[in-house]
Length: 282
Image 1: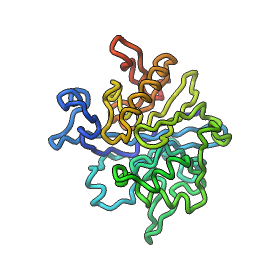
Image 2: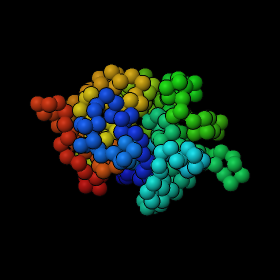
Image 3: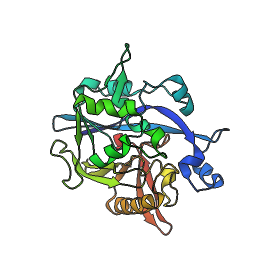
Image 4: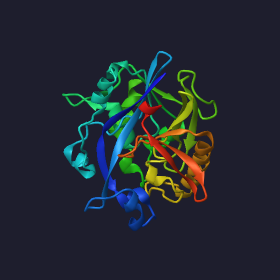
């Protein structure tokens, strides 16, 4: 098995939204903001090469949105999904599976591209796209709180293509994805977000999606305002992070602009950062 992280670019979100009820006087020490209270975040993806398959976990914001939309999020940086794939020796046509942790635009926007004549088509034409029925139903009939994060052009073309498959929480990991050891389902951030867990070089590795956006979110109450069920996130974070500390998991961070991955440890103050690392260090 080979596992790579892929950078797809950087964007900005309001620091207050990202840290919820935590005062700026506290979170800004961990994650500084600019003069507009905006913090820079990564859109990091995971690429897994194993068992004759090439699995892409999430794919960033994509490039089909108009300038007005992109201007809200201050997209910057030189990295692109296509360029990061090329750096590892792959193209979009090589990807066999796209595993979507959830369907917020900064996680799935790269799933679909807009052609020169304005048509929407799959960015990964040979891939099976994986979601789950509960989250798909949630995203395609969105509540008012999340509606702006679920964009029709990112979602419906996947289903219309015939490439969509659902993970069944009651059946475990699909046979088509044997490289995954487990899938943790979390309902705090959004309905049935999926956190994939795999064995890699003698360690368990988890791609944390929005359950743990950054190392700054390690304290249990540091929960995003974007979460639809923040108290549920508290419980889910505690369960996963305690297990990660006990079993020395490597946690890949999707949104931390400074840290690719980390390990955690139990302390008198609860679960806290142990080490930061890159997957190439393993």
